[in-house]
Length: 250
Image (cartoon, rainbow, N blue to C red; front, side, top):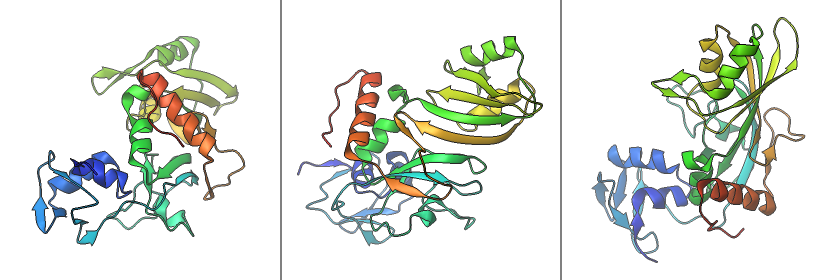
């Protein structure tokens, strides 16, 4: 097997996402053949070299798995948490494979999150150029005006960069209306910050769909395995939006 960058190997082995793998390397938590590695460009061969993370030998996963989880409120969408809060991995009872979250969902948000041990899949779905659309239901403490809704759609300033075009429509009227919001990006706290830009606070936020995968009949805290057809469709969507041919046959 040809040598690959360590962060790609760790991601492909289901240790963590490629971005988090880079952090592990920089922190000196990765060793190859007994030597601690801190250079991001370092390459290795998982079939030939002994690669350890925090002293644990890693291997290629026996099989790739893809999971859709209904994350409850007050659960962390990371593999571990220094504050010892409940993480999404704590909810995967009976899953033997070592998986990690694909992207994130805020601590006080609930809804759909994907998990996998397939680094290629995770990178395809989370890459900014993939433009995988995500759909949310959002309860707000007051309705947006018509002009504000249009400005929401065209983009608002966020950390010095305007948000990408979005979709928004009111689905339930009232003093605390519900909106359906669709985004093709997922910047930190984005929806909450966008509504706050117009003077409104988000009271509840639920993600109901990622690309072609939705919550379906899942109840909060429940999960299911994605069908091969679902994985393939997501990969095709990511490849189409990024302007490349899909490389994965599922």
